[in-house]
Image (cartoon, rainbow, N blue to C red; front, side, top):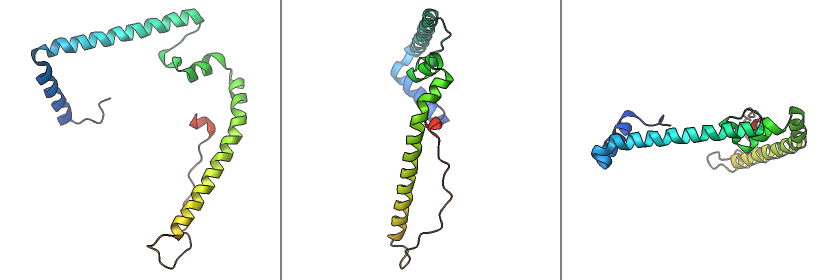
Amino acid sequence: MFENLNVWEVGALLLLALLIFGDRLPAVISDGLRMVRNLRNMARSATSDLSKELGTDIQLEDLHPKAFIRKHLLSEEDEQALRKPLQGVYDDLRADVTGVHNELKDVANAADPRRPGTSSAPPAAPAPRAASYDEVT
């Protein structure tokens, strides 16, 4: 969460907190930690209640609708059957977008004012590996 903060920024935040809360800072920190603990306990109890009701083991991450359906309602064969029609559409769309992208690069290279008198395209760079439908979803 704080990976992108350096030592000076953390120090400035601590100094700002000390100026705002003053002598109450330890009490504010303990109240914040107590609230976080209570929220975790509430989430844990809600997932355990839901697990008992459904009769299966559910983690907090599984409550995302997409993950829930994948894990608890669809078998592997059902999921593949749902993906199969969309895979062809995705591949066709990906090929069309790649073609349009290449044509736009060719037009941009032909219209580049820094290259007077040359309208030939530079050697093509290797095409990036196309992501599959499974990787995107």
